[in-house]
Image 1: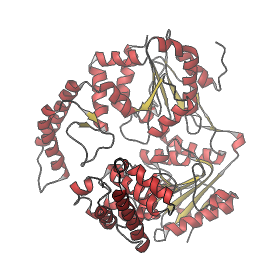
Image 2: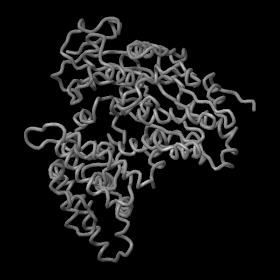
Image 3: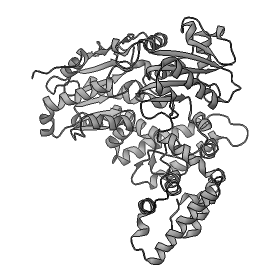
Image 4: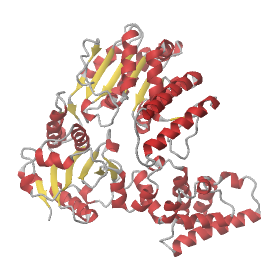
Length: 570
């Protein structure tokens, strides 16, 4: 079949995707080079050439992504074609191991007993600690395992909602890696179901799983093709296989196509990213696309004892002046227009005004991604109610969030619903400082709406949350729904924005990162360099780095920025 390929790399990948003569490959595709596009092109090629053959044999192509968002994007590009099993790594491995409950139980018993023995072999002094609490939980879980008949996968585990039959992210990854390595049947199931396995963001894929996949490829290369897409410079999560960039792929009979042109950023941004990248590894530097122009890079040095919200707004105004780009002058960015990047969620919470609420719920993992049912009750029900005066919208919001309530309604019930809604709206209107707890009590007193059960079962644990101001749910919701303009450094991998303000603030609990050291000395540890590389390469047109540091301009490491690119703010 005659087919035109966008790049030589796409052609090389297509040649690997054969059922008669499968070959594996590792694609090095740097930031902005079109990695996802190449993955989508590979899937379209598979559909055109061997799609019918795969369907006749009852086989599919597996595509593993790092996030649900990435999975959704790829599914959209291939129009949700059922030939392709597209999912996150955790969902994929759970589909492989679920149902093997006896084997899972045996694995857990061995793992838990080993952890218990390890703890008992060491001396422990002082009062109760987290380590002791974890130890006691393992003992309890080991006792309960024999009562478990079927395991479930809990994608958002926490101390509150995880049962004895729940498997965490770490559990499903560890179990699957072990089964694929030690149980030939599991490897056979994988290769028979999925003769082609493509892994996006392979540099961040769990090390044990990656090694298991490589082992399977070696043993089943006559009927199995493993395709790895990634950028070794962008390995920013712990647990990945850190030597992907130095493996002798030729010795493993892997093809090694590469995409070296950055289609995203201006040449000045790429030049800075390349200099950072050269400190990470020796993989090829990127080349700019001439049509994208030069772009802008500025480093702002800001004293630490300032009103950061005010200063960052001033920097946006300055960047609008420097670049002539009106996007920098917008009060809030939307979608790909721009992003202010902070190291951790709490730094965004401080700037957006919901830090009290955030701190009160910091032990609940699901708060970070907005999946908490307790928070969604406020965000999806109470907030929309108080923000509208349209009676039809009020009715729709109430029905949507309380479906069971309207199955057998009568005039009296409808009257109670209206009365409770009116009280909720009036309470917020009359008292903007009303707390979450006070709002819960108003809803409870109405006797018609069902409250999240944990508000009753775990009332003491929710006490700090109930004491915080209800109004903070508004900026929190905007942040979680990614409409506030703020993102985290780690959360933007794979995304791009016209304008990027990368905030380097040492006021963080994450001490592993040495951003100030990099700007002062030109060197830093590996995790810092990788994260800097990621955040710099998000920018398409202009990049403003905001360094909070009580140093003079002369203290900045020479050679990274031109003199007029460094702007001190007093």
